[in-house]
Image (cartoon, rainbow, N blue to C red):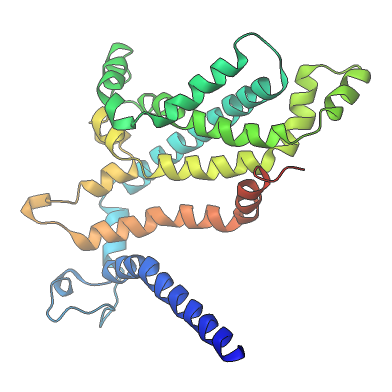
Length: 278
């Protein structure tokens, strides 16, 4: 029995190691290629790690390309979307979970039903709306659409947390002379902060790497986000500059890694807390 347990234990370790290798190999290759000189990208036989590492690709994308402008544009869009969604979704979740009003369940079902609609099927009517409101070639043309994409899921996640909060808290606030806004600000927001942090991380990832809608609505170089800037290296002068592509990709990946590292405890708590009834 002990031999069998050890066998399965080692087998699980082997499977996990293989899984880690499969998941991390593309990232390792991306970092390795970004450190290769342009002449070494097509060497044969190919090497996973460069024989002579260089940061010339990073220097080029930072100095010669409008990297800072693209980076700031992505930050503005991401932060704006996260802030708006956190406010809207938490408010919706609180109202649907705690307030009794006609059509409450119907509204919630309609909000959730938008999650099953593929986003790409709406890109043409959304573009027509952007043109109508003169929001093309502007960062303001990205934020409202991104908000509409992620509000339903965010509302669903936050509502799960608020549903678990005992209603005795509400009654205690009313006895002390508080109102609905008091409960929302001082009770629900602090208790639902893990869920808000979790959906904010998800939303940041969605917005930070979004490409199709940004490509559709943005043509001006001054308002490009990082994914659009990266795509500019594909087929440039009939030749894809892979070193530049991977260098900018590595830089754009750093904020995602840092946010996940510092917000990991909120992320785990947010995913598990809403599923556990307290």
